[in-house]
Structure formats: structure tokens, C-alpha cells
Length: 114
Length: 114
Image (cartoon, rainbow over all chains, first blue to last red; front, top):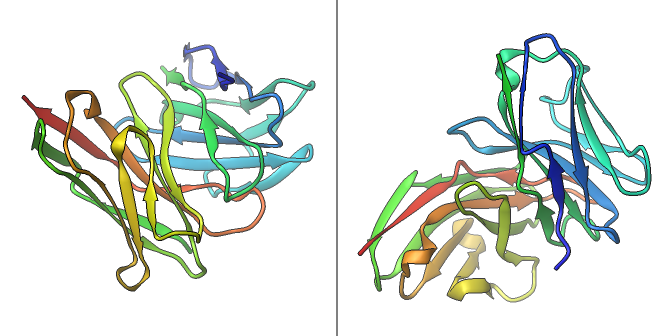
């Protein structure tokens, strides 16, 4: 069964460092998303990506964040200068079409900023 | 703006008993509604979705949910709880077009008592 894969599963970084979280969406999907879940809180939408550009972003997705689809398979989230409050589980998701279709989620990357 | 409220951060039921997880939404347009389940150390898996077809939606693992516009609710039920149902359950809403992201509730942790 096709699945969304994320690497690494856990990343520890020092405050101020740049991190790149990687995702391989399901191959025939067209829409890609990043969400985050701070420990004990709800899952929050960060950004959606379609046709090689950002489609929508939340207020959380500020200038520190960027997304890229560097090749035909990977979808990355970069945090330029990490802060302690960026510590969270980051989920990548992809869907075949837009809002009325199922978004398939990866298992997440747990980012710990120290 | 859309929002989701899940009543009860923790719900405990006995094995074999009815499961009822409550979700109320707020949306300025007809919404698409989803229930996701998250098992420990895993990503989010879609249980079921409402996309303006039948108001009673059946999903995987014996779960179903009923869309009630008058009550702005989308409660999740299962007639008989199983130990394997213990997990975190998230209600989510999408109201925009295209690649709009999901707005999640805070989640309900379902505990199954033997």
C-alpha cells in the first residue's frame, strides 16, 4: 500500500541551527502539506503546496519556514534558524486532489530544539 | 474562519460498550469533515469523511459519524468498543477550495477499560 514517508524520524538540533525535514509523498498525489503538533496540543496546519508553489499558509508559517520540491519525489520543510518553540512533531501529508479527498499522513518527524 | 471543538480530552469506556466522541464545528460555508485516528508513535489515519453526500458516514474499523447541520455536529460512534480502539481521535474540517489545509480539533484520547 502506498504511503507517505518522512525522514528522519527524530532530529535534535541546537537553537539557531537550520534543519530540513524530508518527505516523500505518494507518487501520484498532487497536493502536499506540512502540519505540526506541539506536545500535548492539537495538530496545526502550516502550509500546502500545489503545482510547484505554495497554495496556502497559516500564520505559523513565517519567514523562518520554507518548502521546496527539489525533484520529482521529495518535499522538504526548512526551518532557517530554529527556536525552542519549534520543538514539535512535524507531519507531512499528500492528497490526490484538494479538500474533498483524503490526505495521507506520514509518521512524522519529532524535532527537538535544545 | 473554520474551527473544531472536541468535547472531552479523555473518554473512557468499557470493552464492548458504545463509543461516542463529540465534535462540533464552525464554518462559514458547507464544510468537509473528517475523523482521523492516531495510534502511539504513528501518523494520522483517516477513519471517515463527510463530503456533502450521505449525512451518515461509515468508516473503517466499525466507526461511523453523522453530520447534523442544525447542530453543527459530526460525532463519531462505534457500537461496541474493542481494546484495539484505544488511540487519539481528531476531528477536522476543511472549508476552502483547492489545497486548503485541515483545521483540527484538540483531539480526544480514547481509553478502553477491560
